[in-house]
Image 1 (cartoon, rainbow, N blue to C red):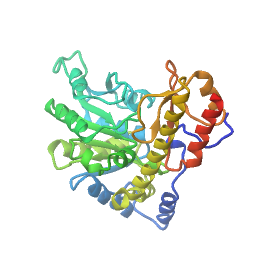
Image 2 (tube, rainbow, N blue to C red):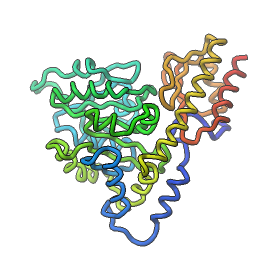
Image 3 (cartoon, one colour):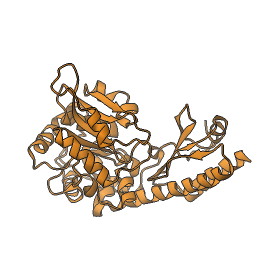
Image 4 (tube, helix red, strand yellow):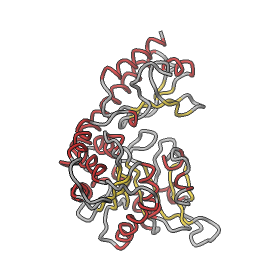
Length: 356
C-alpha cells in the first residue's frame, strides 16, 4: 500500500473536474423526461454534430468498455470478427467483454507501437466467404494507443481506405481522444469523420467526467451509417448501457465538449504537458544511469520507461503505477488532467534519489 494518494497509475485515478460537478448539480432540478428524451441530452446531440459533422449522431454510455462493446456489436454481424492490435484495450483490458457480451472473435495483430498499419489490416482479410473462418467485419484502432502512441491523420486515412475497400467498417476507440486532438492540434472531425472513421467511442471519464462516454456514428446519412444509428438504441439497452436519468450523463459530456471541446482540450493539453515534462526528466536521468531507459517519446499523456525490478518496487512504495511488461521491466506513468508539476518533479526526484 502506498502512502502517497497521488500517482501515475491511470488518468482514471483523477477526480471529477469541478466544472463537471457543477454541470451535474445545475441539471438536478425538477423533472425531465427519462431515457434521453431530455433537453440536456438534446444539447449533447447538437454538440456531436458540431464536433463530428452535420450527419453525426451520439449515444451516451456509462463506461468505455460498454461503449466499445455497443459500437462493435453495431458494426458486426453474428458471424463477423474484429481486427485489432494485440495490445488493444478491447483485447487485454476489458475482461473478455467483446467476446463474452458481444460474441465477437478478435483477430489480433502484434504491434510494438500499439498501432496498426494498412498492411497488417490486409494480412487478416483472407478466406472471405469461407465458413470455417470468422469473417472480418470491422477494424478497431485506438487513439491514443495503449502504448501512448499517436496516429497521424494520414495513417488513419490509409487504414480507412483498406478497410472500406474490403467492405469493412472502421471503429476508433477514443478513450483518450481529447489527448490525441490536443497533441495533433486538430479537431475531432479532422481525424475521425474526415479520415474515414465510421464509429467512435468518445471518452469522457479519463478527461474529467465522473462516468460518461458515448458512441458516435460519424455519418448517419449513408446507408450503413443509418443502419448503425438505427441499431444503437436497441443495442445500448440490451447491453445494459441505457441510463434512465440520462441528463446527468449528458451534463458531464456537455461540460467537457461545449465550445468546441474547450474544457476537454484544456485538460488534455495540461496532461500532455505534464507527460512531456516527465519524459524529459527521465531522458535526462537515463543519460547518467544506463539501467534506466525510455524507448518511445511521450506523444500524449503517457510515459513508458524501462526500470530494473528493484527500482520499480521502491518507487511503488510512494507512487501508484503499473508494470506494463513484466519481461522487460517496462512501466507506465500516466498523467491526468489534475497532475501537477510538483507530482512530476516529486517522482523524478524519487527516481534520482534511489539511483544515487
